[in-house]
Length: 398
Image (cartoon, rainbow, N blue to C red):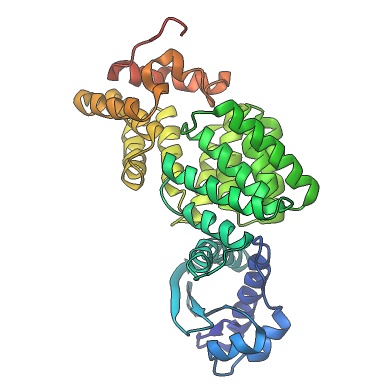
């Protein structure tokens, strides 16, 4: 719906209309989203809005409404999502900003609303009862599980649901792409016992999905993840940039783009900026733990263990079951002389993954194939892990 201008100045109407138009465009770029056109929505401008009546009139399940108030250099935007069947409020958020460059401000606000709203709609849709689940039901249920902390069990359940969707429709490009993404993410998070098989199958699925749907952001994203897992970051960057071209509000693509740029010699500062862009777009993202971890690791690479500990502890609180968060935190603690904490974190990392059995083993995994990253890690991460008690080598084959 057109956002209401609550400012005393009627000239601010253009800004409220601009936010509404940009939101319409941004939301329509979310895969699988059906959004009523701007011209139709604006016929309701200035009229009392009943979400249930709009739902019946336009055949939509949700109504997004809001208001904009500007006072001096302060801008406040309120947005809320309403169930068009029941009239219930499902989500609400307030965004306070400094006016400054109004065009940039408009982009910032609409981008964050679109990125935040996507997961909220997903959770709501997945919760709708269905007596006879179809392909989309299984896909939605699997996607909703992606809003929970990562774990082996979670990945297994997601993959199982995507498998059921693909069994119902073997030509579903979306099911192929999302299954490929889940298989690859499980490998990248060191939670797969069949790494080579998962990557090979994911590659086959992503290739087929791109053939069927060349403009699928999810298919390009899955292909990018596969290339990253294969240590082909230059090629992966092209795919992540393709995702952003399709949907400029894809926070995960910015985060992964930065990570790949680091592998090929990009500056830590540039990578930090891309990670911060992801967090600005989706400050409550289900993947926020991983982004906090990366900012912590980047601070460690910059020899800032105090700052690193702050980010890494946030990541651990959000998801304590991730080995690389615990291992990196062990290194940061050790560099600060907190030996008991370091040893405890390293012990937890070892319980979660065998890659922390020795430095030799850790150095074999992606992302440490890059000489640039190894040069950053040697005096910081690796040095800290040595202080925490990690041996140079374990089994003879190492």
